[in-house]
Amino acid sequence: MTDFPSPSDRSKSAKSVAFALFRPVLFAIGIIALALGGLVLTHRSNPEIATAQKQLPAPPATAPAPIVLVDSEPAPPVTSAELKDGAFKGLELKGFQMKPPDPATDPEPPASDRYELTLRLERGDTVEKMLADIDVPDADRKQIAEKLQTLLKKKKLATGETIELLMQTMPEQPDAPRVLSLSVRPQPEREYIVSRKDDGSYDAEEKIYKVSPRIVRVEGERDGSLQQSGIKAGAPSAAMVEFIRAMSYDVDFQRELKQGQKFTVLLEQLVTSDGLVTHPGRLLAGELRLLKRTVTVIRFRPQGGADGFYNPQGESVVRSFLRTPMDASKLTSRFGMREHPILGFSALHAGVDFSAASGTPILAAGTGKVAMAGYNGGYGLYVKLQHTQDVATAYAHMSRLGPGIKPGVSVRQGQVIGFVGSTGMSTGPHLHYEFHRGGRAVNPLAQKFAMRATVGGKDLARFQALSRQYLNQMKNAPAAADVNAKPPPPKTSQAPKDPATPQVARGD
Image 1 (cartoon, rainbow, N blue to C red):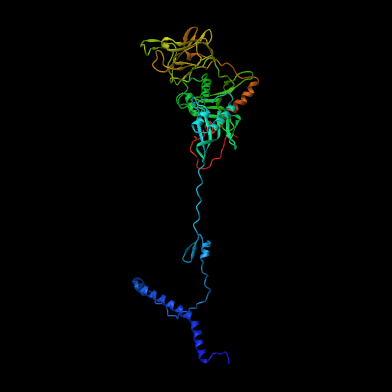
Image 2: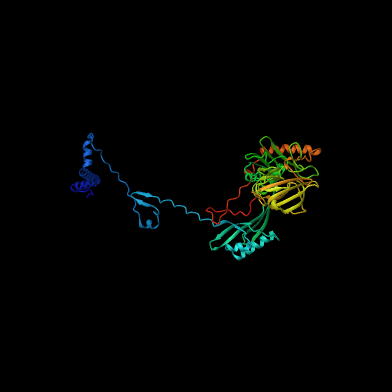
């Protein structure tokens, strides 16, 4: 016998094989038919789509393309073990797409715990007491005070001195801040610094800044008194007093000096290496531009002599007497007969009156000795200077005397002997100025005074070179307002947002 099937069995097996082959096709056709049926029902239920389809042109009739299904291996199912192992951790399954997680945002950096603080030493304060007031631990403030005292030695800090601190707040002790550094600068060229080391102890050092000269110019315009106009423009008061004194030998302040006239002063400042001014400026030269002329003065020291002021021709500006004893703005009453403004009858006005603001400095017209200083009837507060056996000057209606002015004291020309006031028989603040010859009052404005000295010999060439240099610098030197260091911004006890780098000293 053979293993072949019988004819009846062969027909059954062939039918089974054909059915098995066409079963996927039939299954696919069934799914497509169901989808098309659903689509037709949807279109029929929506009248807008149906209307739009009626308006569209009919597509050309073509035979449908045969659908061929390709057998593929099914994807392996996801097991519970893979889910537990985190194979899809962080992925969001949405349909058949996997979305990566949003990137994590960086946390904000913590705020810095360092900050700067400036304290001012008040009357009765000590450094240790000031640190106690801001809750610095006892052990730290004692160390700091001792280290600072070793630098200061026997010197004491003046009331009003500022102390700069770099502080740090500790998380474990928020109410007991730590001092990282303390610095105090009682003189611009010296700074004392106490800084904390890594082991918690403190170290102290003295920083000395190099001081060098710097030449600057100040330009201004007269508005009020010449002295105050210079101060407003940025010149130190002492330099303006020197400038006025040098000009007063040759300038009639009452007749020639007007509002709006311009002036320039050349100054020599002393500056530290980090830009702090230790001396506001010594007068080197000055220029006053009047209506019809320009008056220039230049500082010069002859060999074996003292500093003095000269004009560009080498002539000393110093005369026997000043033309006017103050920076006055107006001549209000001349020498001679007049009706007395208070008594109401005609009398000799034995001097000249200069109107000026109360407190304006009054200068000695010449070198001499104080013969009288005090109240003198209608003259009010009064000073009389004896210059020679024959010549004297007098100054009346003062508000107060100059420093050290009393009978018997010698004064130099241009020294401040008092200040403008309205004492005695006076209708307002002014200076009454008298000039006496042989015991008689004469007109001060009619006196002629000769120049005293000129530069000569070996000094002449040196003076001429210095004169050319100063005249050039009065035009081209940097302006004081542009080069003077600006004050640092005020410090605050608030912690900065960004971490601050500790810095215990400033300088080069």
